Length: 262
Image: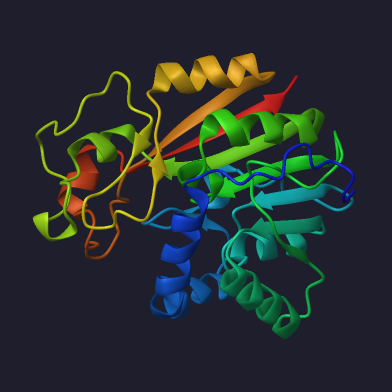
């Protein structure tokens, strides 16, 4: 599947800042993230079980699966355990190194590559299933990575991606020490796209309105099958620094889009 397609090797201007941010914080976040290698598939901050959401096919034997922005690779590991032929890519070298170490430790054959979602190094129609969980879905411009995802997914294949909800983004204070999201709109809904936070100026996030997501997905050959809006589960314990259980019981902090390439 790799690698004749590299139409333009010019990296997006924001990419290096995001790589630097993940490199700087990777060690501090490693222990909590690596625990997910030991868990059954679950999603988001509140660890919603895959059962009921069914984001991953129950049987993936023989499927070619790609994770875009794989980080330490735990989602890739879930797919590999289901029998898929898995490739995970991430632009951050230290993350790929950790993912490779973990796959060796767990005796899983996963192809981890240092690459980025805006310019995928794969031939057209290479994959049956593509997923991004807080990878390109948050840190890459959707007007760049979604066309690439569309290109590498076979017709009838699936795209699943998880990111912050638009509610979260609109109500989150500019500065991290300003606290978690509240109940006031702090930035415009219309026209939202590139978001930079003043206390982490090196990093760039991308968010769209639901209307713009629908418009873009449809234009790139996707049928939208589901939009899951994740709130705190009733039995969830505690809160996170970036969102309280009280807030997340009233509003979804995260959203998951499930699409079919038509």
